[in-house]
Length: 123
Image (cartoon, helix red, strand yellow):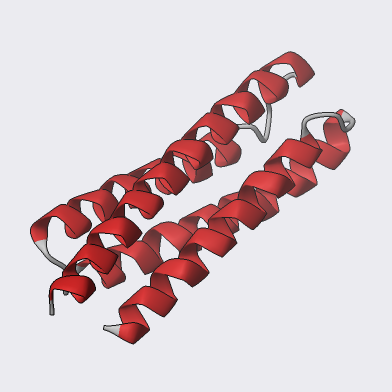
């Protein structure tokens, strides 16, 4: 179970780093934002895929939180990919949406961690 706990903590730290990266991009120029969003899309996709694998061996409540977090990270990745031909206004709006998705994913990760801690304390 310690490896699950460690994996959840790493995923949350990676998600927090992704959130910080997206937040920094909010104030940048159009071209700089595009480059940052491409990297953020890759990171979000990797996090989503990682959480899917991690959720496979979890109890139902933790598995659901991991699934929800994975979906939010995947949505953030999709938002970032859709911005290749977007205007600056559209990029800033999508950037805010990505921040919201990432925050929601982190919330689900925290809930999954709490569920896992609860399970560990009962054993």
